Amino acid sequence: MSIGNVILLSLSLFFIYGTFISFVRWDYWWVRIFDYPRLQISVILILLVIASVVIYDFAKTWHFLLTGALLVSIFYQGRKIYRYTIFTPKQVKQYKGDENVNTFSILVCNVYQPNRKAKKVLNHVKKMKPDLLLLLEANKWWEEQMDEIEEEYPYTIKKPMENLYGMLLYSRLKLKDPKINFFFEDDIPSFEARVRLNKTDYFKIFCLHPKPPFPTESTTSTNRDAELLLVGKEVVKLDQPVLIFGDFNDVAWSNTTRLFQKVSELLDPRIGRGFYNTFHAKYPMFRWSLDHVFHSTHFQLVKMKRLSGVGSDHFPIYVKLHFKPEERDLQEEPDADGDDYELADEKIDKANEDSK
Image 1 (cartoon, rainbow, N blue to C red):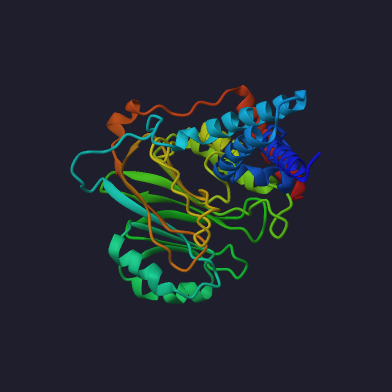
Image 2 (cartoon, rainbow, N blue to C red):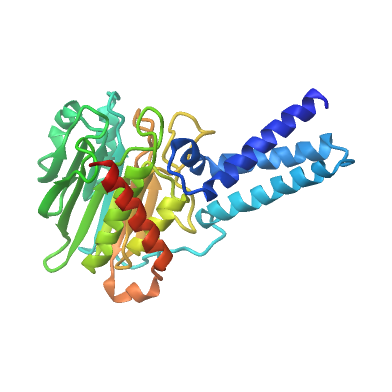
């Protein structure tokens, strides 16, 4: 076997493995890491099929089997990311009326704690004028840099930390019952509060930033998955307008985020509109969606935009929504079945056991 055949065979087997390992429910990082680069893997698989047609003479059965496996892998990867293309129906209805007191905006920005380009973040805040601003990976230095906006953003929840998981929430809208949670780890905070939109309407928010499955952070995705699913299950019990946003350290097309959507019954405004990849800001070939805004059917989308870089490894994401509960039946909620709830409970129970 020639060196070209060996290289092609090795790469083909690796990326076929990287495709179908996601069928395994293991939470180990070396399994879950393949959830992220599905678009990149799809491109590589296409190139491998082209190389197979050029290099193989198809005189052996395994030539056909391997090329067939590559084609099946392309189909599977494409099916996973297809919902985040413009070729599928939009999950969130586009609002086309006038903006008024029921219209509000959110800016989510993972600032990258060592980053010192705070002026770029402030420029986005001054230009976009979000009603809710969430800064992630924020320490005391970042809190001090934001002092100049506090007059415009009088309502806050703050938990600056030095471990890359500090959070700062600034709001023009009144926050009621603000709370800082630590679900499974004492150094990983999350926020929740009720937000007063106008004289009569409130909505609930949750802000999340769990650890990713990566050797330097967490060897498994157990706690990340459990935090998302625990909040997702809580949302359904509330039966009120809800938004969940932040850096989930998970991609929109992963099995976990899909399960989160089902059990929470929340909508993703990216579906049918695009990937809106926010990470990695400095490496265009390695980008995927880590920063999210999910919401209940009470809201319609006015605008969604990935903003320019701020010196971080994440791009900020900006979302403007309109509260229109009278048309919530026009948007179909994701639907979970018994197996989905059982799987969610299993993941939450496992995280609770591990944290004891």
